[in-house]
Image (cartoon, rainbow, N blue to C red; front, side, top):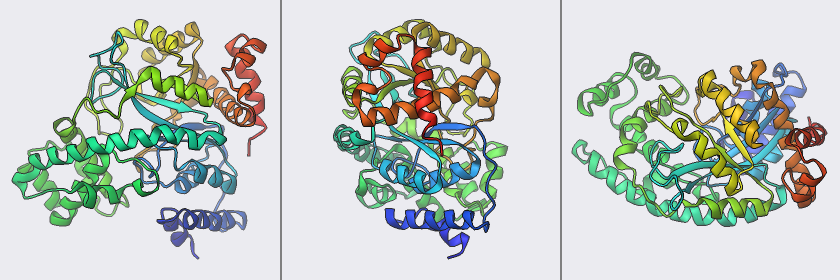
Length: 428
């Protein structure tokens, strides 16, 4: 098969088809038919796949991560760990080091932060957290919790589709959750369905009716009364872009999610319950810092205030809950915000994890800002994450925050150095 056919095969319906396409591309690299990318020391621990919402299957995510020059890549899907085994195998094929984990929404109800906007643009009281470095022999146990979350989330999703139908009815449009939305997801194989899937279904309906380009732009502006910025208009005029639907979806997301989103869903489990369960599996509970934002890099979030006003209260509280790490994205915040967060991490002994939240086709897998000297330690920490994941897979008592390890290496710096040494043994 030629390269173009193999690239398309990376997003084939079946896992074995995707992996076979990946093997074909690896063979072409080995034979010099595809140029090897320049190897870098860049890392990224937070890449979404089609098992939540992304243009990349686990195999595709690994391939494009490798071709971007990354030396490690981590899968983090919303409410799903079902792509993890494919991701690990894909890493073996491509010879790139991987980490696995997932991202879930948790409720801070009954805590001092009930009613506050944390890191979730859509819902106060509820926060996104990442569960990094899952031991490979605990995937099924992690999924036991995630299956419950997905079931509750789909109850909310179905209700949200009905609410959206009330909004789009005047345009002669409607969606069916089972027929239009779920088939766009990997729900049949343990994937989650998100608000983006709902809007992806609407996007497809709009393109089916108005086509790509000028007709669609006129409808969005004149009928839906949406404001389309010049840079976004330019994207919508590029009708040949391979993931055109994503540009349309981003416009709809900013406008419609606040209108159809239903708060208070039972899919946001209590934060303490989730953290305790995660710790029992040896995964690293991680609070995801967002911080006040002026403008979203991907154009799908409005300017909004998040945790900055109460970080001094929040970080010690999540530490007490059992969070062992804190993640942040250097490209999304000001240096002033990032310095403050890093200082708080050192003060509270939070393991620092970075990962650029990849779920859009126009995003780069590499965060150039992370190459600054101020963030050099994040690369070391990634190798420590690799070390933890593999050590905890072999022996739960060897996790980065086990009592045994904390006794042997009381300081966080010592532990990071210890696990970095282990992690580098898995460098491919």
